[in-house]
Image 1 (cartoon, helix red, strand yellow):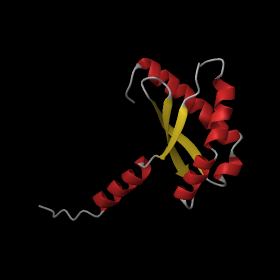
Image 2 (cartoon, rainbow, N blue to C red; image 1 turned 90 degrees about the vertical axis):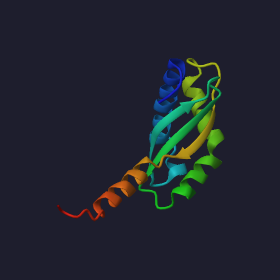
Image 3 (cartoon, one colour; image 1 turned 120 degrees about the horizontal axis):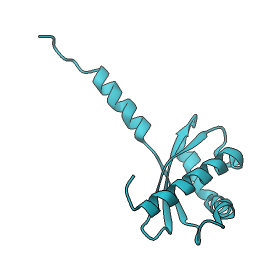
Image 4 (cartoon, helix red, strand yellow; image 1 turned 180 degrees about the vertical axis):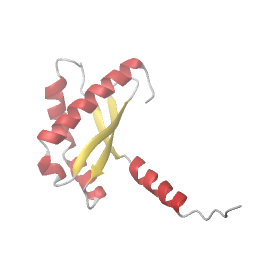
Length: 119
């Protein structure tokens, strides 16, 4: 995680609150998918938060992400209600799919399929 300590602390706060929001309140938005907030990266002025989502049990990740994008204002409002005493502004949310797991699986498959001759 890069950025200043202030960005990191604010990012962790946003991550914690969004995780709780998705866990408790937004089952209608994500359906049966299990959403994990993998990372939150804040802009230097704390006005924009890039939220990296790990979507488990989602058949169509793009459809789930589009549904989250459609309800972004509702999610931002819920976030604002939770952090209003701790922050001056509620950041604009940009949701992205975290592809670390898929990349790790792809690398693991490549390593398994390597044909290394014995000496």
